[in-house]
Structure formats: C-alpha cells, structure tokens
Image (cartoon, rainbow, N blue to C red; front, top):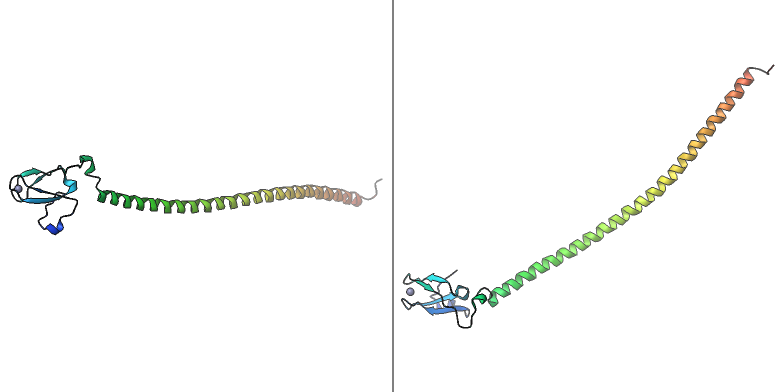
Length: 150
Ligand SMILES: [Zn+2]
C-alpha cells in the first residue's frame, strides 16, 4: 500500500507529494494513502501522509481510477448477467416447448386409451355373446344326440 517513489517519472498526478517533517526527504505516495501513518524510508520516523486540501477522507477510496475500475467491473458483471438471462430465456422456451409436446402426447394417449377401452368393452360383449351361442349350439347337439324326444 504505502510506497515511496524516488524516481520523479513514477509520480502520477494523483499522487500526494510531501516532505518528511523529520528529514525533509521528498516523498510521493498514492492518494489512497492520505491520512495513513507510514514509516519514512529515509529516517525511519513514523509520519502521517497529509490529506490534500479539498480532499474529503470519504473520497480517498473513490478516486476516478477506482470508480473507473468499479464501472468496468460492474459492466462485466452486467454483461455476464445479460448473457445468463438470454441463456435462461432460451432454456425456458425449450422447456415450455417440451412441456407443450408432452401435454399434447398425454392428450393423444388419453384419447387412444379411451378408444382402446371402448374396443375392449366391445370384444368382451362379443366374447359373452360367442359363449352364449356356443352353449346353445352344444345344447342343441346334446338334444340331437339323444334322438327325437319321446
Ligand atoms: Zn524522514
């Protein structure tokens, strides 16, 4: 976090530049270090990084750079969420189509089951009728075998 920069080329516009109150060494620190207590790299004294004029302590974590990073990150999250929404919508559509297909199949099967039930009923009635006819035929055959009655 708190770093000092001796190379003037490394100092950014957002850095806080100040002199150590003990050894007068010129120091530069990232503006997020404002108000922090650091150790002077030259004299090892504990010094407080000054808060630049007009800068609120609450602004320290909200520099333009931080906000840009935050906005970029939020855009990434938003893009990911939007992609996920499109995926979920497509998935939902697929599921709805599948549900519709299954409902149609179920309705068709219900109709088929109804037709089969009626056909089974017809067959059962026919079987009963055939059994009656066979019994009656058997009865006639027994009577014929017995010869003319009296
Ligand atoms: Zn110092």
